[in-house]
Length: 274
Picture 1 (tube, helix red, strand yellow):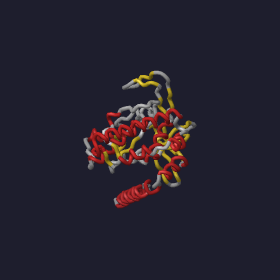
Picture 2 (picture 1 turned 90 degrees about the vertical axis):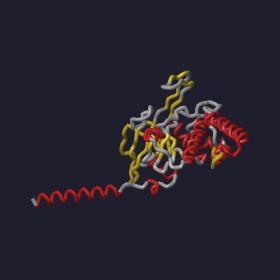
Picture 3 (picture 1 turned 180 degrees about the horizontal axis):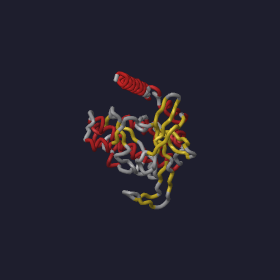
Picture 4 (picture 1 turned 120 degrees about the horizontal axis):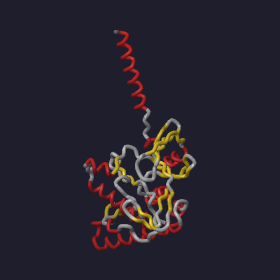
């Protein structure tokens, strides 16, 4: 009996030791990769050791496990690149000259950086399994906006929450996003909002997609839009966007700024937030 008891105690002790070690080695990625540049370098250079289908989204993305020295982290890989002329019938709409490309995900991230938003996770171009695509930093411990609504969760700061959503609406009009939905807005435990899935953006449209959504404006965002330089956009996004796609985006930028100035003149500072 004593022998059996000793065996049980040994198993429990070993289990506790293994659990403690597993807990200890969980990496704090915010400390290991504190800057966007460090995250981008890790995405480009870390070894890909595992892949599995996410099972969400219509572009069949993969969740990859990457190894950087002793550190493992996750990223999303997408290699869709579909471009069709004429009419394409989608699940809820019909689109002219439909485009769905991983290159737009990279362009959206580069544009997010130029604007100083920090609302699109770091995204780079990288080849996996012989296919070129985009690799995007995995947002840890996040729920979707659909999850939030289903659980009936309310943000602790309603004003900050609504301000973030207005930034999303401005950005979606800027990039002409035809696929914003409850599954591609992510929310972390600190209630930060992340925008993902921009492969169906950057249509060759000069007009805004839904200007009625733009009722309030971030002053810092508007100022960043005004300073958006065509040469810099070409430098950062020219690999992923055509000249026409860049010109169309800048015309939408102009339309957003004009709409802001019109509504500011009519309603004053009530439409503004930092």
